[in-house]
Image 1: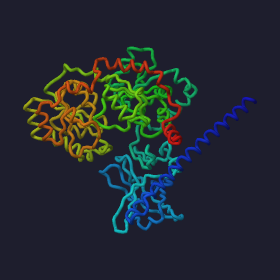
Image 2: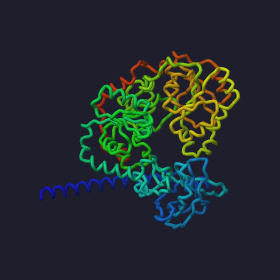
Image 3: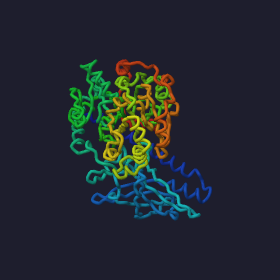
Image 4: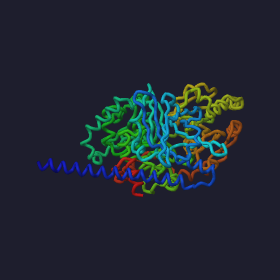
Length: 585
């Protein structure tokens, strides 16, 4: 009887605690609403143009829903009543310039004082998954007849609450596609459209929940079990820093609970046999990742989930509480990577390739000094300078965000593909390669694999996958890239690097690469640079790699073992940590 009373009292206290937190979050979002409205109106009525523009920017989404048995999706927008006479129309616009926008139909208006609520709708059938995000756009015309387009990204607190942790539960599925509204990390409202991934299938979602219910009583033991899980990009590779560290650690500490997560297809393809490999989607995999303390990878933490990382499921939220050690997949500095910056919830601790890189990480990425360990990169232990050949040139273009999710035909019409096709088929390039008996190799970034059929059409160049990087870098006399961190691997060996940055290349702000290589902007300049001698001697670049010494993998493991008392699991999920931080502020 006493136990039952205590249990009831505990449940009441727990309920009161969550109600208090709920009120805090609601008040937080209400305060955001107030701030947004105030900032939008604070510009004042300077003239007709400014007045119309500021009022249209004050629009916000206050509700949404979809019809259960139809493809029609509704959005309710709140806007200043004074702006309604100037409205020209609405449309959904994709983040893919190769696609047309979708006309949005106005279903009705209801004036409520100084505000008007407008109900608009569109058919989900019109949305294509080749665009990742679709934004609601409002077009207005001012007194002078000029049109102004505003992207409606703001939403009220009810909509934000409805969409947290994301809007996947409001999704509509069409064959192999899924479409749903969501709130991005910057709190912007968008419609997301993409392919349904393998590990989002019902059987895997159900298994993940069942596994969680079975390990629930063991969760308090996480810090004592001290399980470590290594992985790489989308859990589909085993050749980067994470795999090399895992392999060496298995030799040094065979009894420790350390595992490597990978897909079944990749394991078979690479013929990996270690007994501590866990296959994505299996019962063993779910048990271990729920109970793991540390995630160690050459990518961001959610790659441990393979292709199911793209919506904030229960599994994603659980992973956000783990300690993530970023083992890098290349030295940084050539391009800016905001996702890796401190406070983005992706990385807790990380290694640095050199003193120079650590200074950059602390200064530019804002990491505390004691969260960055200078070790060198394990992948540098795999480079073999003796393999050098004057007859090999390697091209390694990095991923471009503006060519994501395209069809083969659309990809072949991009500036990226056309530029490389023109280069490899130009008479100057072909003559230079044949006269000097040189083999050209093109390494595909993992995200380019979907366009492999297009790349195979290219002449006078051999197509390679990313697992060939170490061998080709070791052999190559010259590396040609745009922003890839493989440039540092070549420089580490004292080889020549050419940065090919053609006119339409997506801009990445980073290091002034003129200091470490030759920069060219067109095919003619590139061919001239291939012929010229290197402008930078190896001794001039040594300061970027200090302290430079062998056994980088060994140093990584030593740093991990020495600092493991610092690795404390998070009490709250990333979203909760972010909300708590903002509420406190």
